[in-house]
Length: 143
Length: 112
Image (cartoon, rainbow over all chains, first blue to last red; front, top):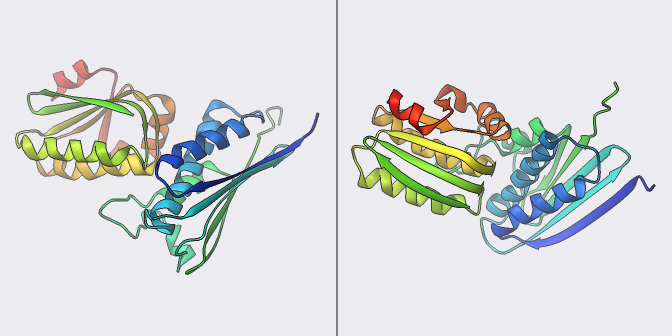
């Protein structure tokens, strides 16, 4: 049996596509042996990353979001990329409770990504966009 | 996402079904906000989340936003029949400090 697989989605920056992206990635991820809680974790993490692209990357305007997911063996890697305004201070953006829209947002998007995934990497350049890469490994139930 | 509201004295019962995220939360937020504006005697918000299958920070932000009004009016926030995933994300976001979990709306109505 093959132990690697991948998908790539290119979707418009539209709030409706947040649910589509998380569901599609969770469906793909379900080819690996996750618990139901872990699949929910993946859905939340993807939802947060795509929401960030739509709200912050593109300020709810038109744009393209690239969603890629791949696994090799037990390691799932998901990347969410936009070509929007980018993040000036990546460290600050990942602080618990930090948000650029305090009246509407809780500032917990990155917190959830870090909590639910094993690894989160953020690459961003102001005016060019942001790419969030998240990794989660299937736990070895016998260890 | 589907929701309906029921007024019970000083409490508003919001029953949610489906997923509360960036797309579905603005309409829910507007309806909830208007209800609290229209009914100045409303103090408590009872979120019946038995049918809620997904929530992320966008949905949680809407509830937190309304909590500020509840707090101003001396009310309480309840989550009824939260499934384990919903309970986990609520706890992780600190909602256990500002809200209470319950098994039924009847239980809550006896408490407020």
